[in-house]
Amino acid sequence: MNKNKKLANACRSKNSHNTKGDKGLCTPSKMLAISALLVSGQLSAQGYYVDEQSAKRLGDAFSGGAAEAEDASTAFYNPAGLSRIKQSELVVNLSLLNTQTDVSATGSSLDQMTSLNTYTTTPLQGDGSPSVSEVFALPSIYLALPQYDQLAFGLSINAPYASGTEFNRDFVGRYFSIESEIAGINVGFMASLKLSDQLSIGGGVNMQRVSASIEQGINVAGFCSGAESLGFTGGNTCSGIGIGAPGTSSSDGYFKVKGHDTDYGFTAGVLYEFNENTRIGMNFRSKIEHTLEGSANFTIPANAEAILSALDPNLTTHATSGTVELVTPETLSISGFHQINERWYVQADANWTNWSRFKSIDIVLEDTGSVLSTPQHWNDSWRLALGGGLKLNPEWTLRAGIAFEKTPIPDQTASIDFAFDDYKALSVGFSYEPSETIVVDAGLQHTLSFDRNVSQGNASIFGDAATTESHIETQYTSLAVGLRWKFGE
View 1 (cartoon, rainbow, N blue to C red):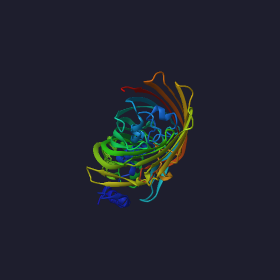
View 2 (cartoon, one colour; view 1 turned 180 degrees about the vertical axis):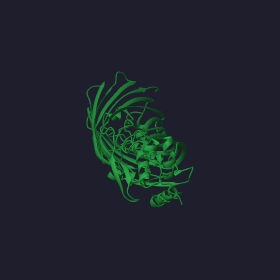
View 3 (cartoon, rainbow, N blue to C red; view 1 turned 90 degrees about the vertical axis):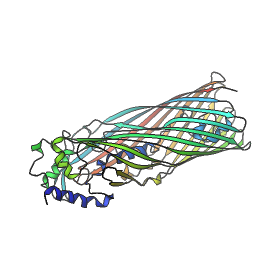
């Protein structure tokens, strides 16, 4: 048996406990790029779902969305509230979300394997303190069409999933993140029925389109050096075939993956009005089961392919595909609204997300049939918000709010791409009504910094051939403007 075959057998032995149906791939978990794609998709779906779906709601920290029901955006926040809209209304919003991420990172690369179980490392070279700023534009459209006194219809089109990060290729954490992006569009068709003067129900169908892409580096120099130290390079040396020294990025490989899916879920809501000044609302959004179909493109330096393909058949320049089941979890929102007097109102909201169903990512590679399972073990989360408003005069209304949510992401599964910690936000906004048919809304929200330490990787040749320790600070500022147009009788 030659040395490459011995190494392949060792790889099978080392990885057998991490796979289901594995056909012998010595595959570092990050090398299966589709797993990173799925982490991106799941995180952006609420960890963190993008709140900025309404300029009016942004101004009060989304504190009473299921109960206030005073504009067409209730088609999204609680369709039962459509029963309160007495005149046809179109709402158009544009939100700008600015993210600022500052990273302080160190890393290590595999240097030499002293045995199949022990190794030495060397520091990763590159930029250890990148600062990344991104701006996302999120449009949304809502339509309310009341029919008779008891029946109303609504339409919502928005982008509740949007996230992205891009680092330079010399980033110290390049083997765990270079670029990630996710975008989602949700189209909802809703209806409400007023059962009595106090009680309304509503519901409808959501069509959800999710697409995502991610790029990461491959530590070619580290893998090659580890293989050479074990004598698995056929007598060649890494430097002799032109591979750079461990820790450098000159010989890095890359992969980039993309995936997308469209699927359906439902929304159901109820609104109860104690009187004209006080009401409570509840809205439920179902889980949506996606099967993301992805393409993965691996780029490996030609002079390294023979050595790296002995470690893992994926580590050649090629394209493959894979699928993974992704469930966007169900959410439940309970809101209350109270009009204190003609000028003042207060409202509150509690929103639960069933993140505990997100226990692992199971990726199926179509070319080999291999399945790799990556644990996640997230926790359920509650988002709490309190807000209110002041009507200065018939034209101007001011509002403000605060919100808090404990992160669902355990320390052991936090990553550079999504190092979110507990969510704390402050909001202010206003509405200006120049006529009976036109209202202009604006909102501004600042999210206090997420501040988290992240540890990723395994420097063994049977892992990622690299590790990184990062301190990541991220903050958001959101600005939204909207126009409400009332038409018809």
